[in-house]
Image 1 (cartoon, rainbow, N blue to C red):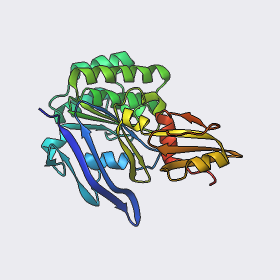
Image 2: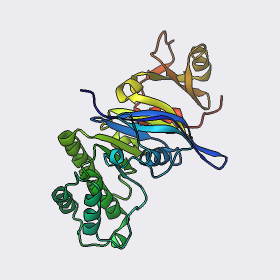
Image 3: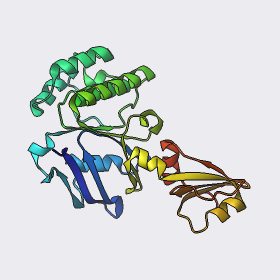
Length: 287
């Protein structure tokens, strides 16, 4: 039996004359962990908000197992999205937020939510308005993890968290994923922290998807060569160059494919996910 899947097909979102998303198509499968990577303002939150009906697309379609997600409460109840902004009244206590969320999500696990609150040392009687930035993030993480939804979306999930709480969150997320085999999407620009966690990557910049696929495939689908500018320039002839950067007389090029017939004097390296992200989204250097 195939896993459930969310599909976003050719999503376009305009605000006036400005495009927030331009023809975005992605698939998110249950039972996998995705990294939705992009700089601030790249369109990550907009895409998540369109999938969850918090924002409506200008055109395009989002589905879950073939059912349109637009104003489809039954399908939307299978998705829980933690947003960077606060979506509940600030005057509520965390306990009240738990009760409200449980009313909307039949699979919500209150006991699990309170056990997480204890681990994070979050007082359930405390009002959301009285929480620090870090603990407000913690409250949202707990509600998401305990929701019981088939798909969990996390938008900048470690905002304001200290190192201990960040580590605890990632450990709890892995445990929850192993138990439920939910689909997980982590939207972030802090790539180094989640690189070893995500199985699939979607890199978005200026409203467009630059790369999407299994993390391993994306890492092995490109390489960098570094050396004297003249050598790098000559080597790059008739090859697909994704990014070229120059520092003085030294050049570094990021190319698609696998290295072949690399001349002496050029250093070849395989970039990590952070480097791939920078190469695909960073400004090009002097040509």
